[in-house]
Image (cartoon, rainbow, N blue to C red; front, side):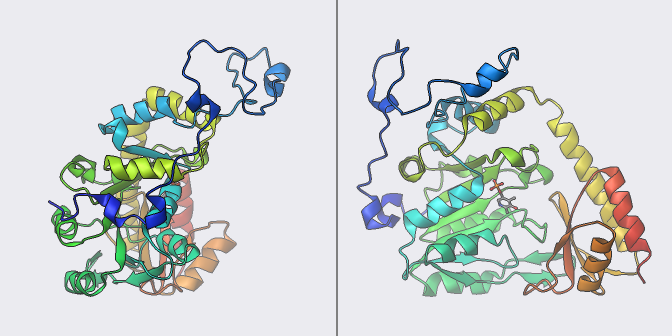
Length: 365
Ligand SMILES: *Cc1c(COP(=O)(O)O)cnc(C)c1O
């Protein structure tokens, strides 16, 4: 069990007394209001007027539900997480930003990351005047592992480290972090441990959200942007203990998720019955693509992946990137990033897209 029982002691002092922005909707206790002159909204639903013959009419002129109650309920059922432990962000990147602002005092507190990893943790930290400590992963055969010795030394010698980010499956390498290592970190680190599970549905690991009641310092991030195919809606999920969630809600912009996004997400979560089928198809295609790539002249190494992308080391990463680009195929060039020399991150596409990718790569010597 984590040493901190009360995450309040980790909050920046001025955050402790923040009251959430109170809307008229929060203050009105009744249930039968029909005239809304409280939010300076336009009384005319212009789109509704123009397209009134359509069935699906959204009140585009009205502000959305700031509590996102119906969508939270739906996600709670889907993920088997209590509603009081759920925060929804405008993408999970918003949750990362809010967590750093809530817990890290600029110029003093720090975050720990294990590169190569998702760049947004450091970006959000830097924007907020918070230093990032790198504990690089160690490349081993076709995967990467955490440098446990260096990580625990860093934890011991950096008392101002407030948040540690673990990305599993990791972007861009595609590998997972073993559950036992995450448990060990949760036990030994006196700050918050964020487990970013953006790609969990493509892996054979189980979510750490089931451990929330055992660790008050655990924060789990998920998103509807990847396996659910809803990147355009910008809906991220943050699961954590009730105190952390309560403060995140006080800090967020009241209407951080549009009503249209909320309604579409509810509809899709309830009715998109082919989500698992598509996820399985992407996994199968990923493994097939991985095997084919391993046989190509231009490929040095394909890392094991449990995500919807492959991290591939080429003989010449920049050259391969340009040839692909000339053929209209855009991949993520990580060749010039530390610890990623000659590596490209390639998202698993449709059968046709992957075939086109392979046809170009086959011709590179
Ligand atoms: C894509 C991604 C996210 C998520 O993004 P949102 O679209 O902002 O929800 C989060 N973490 C990682 C590691 C990702 O790759």
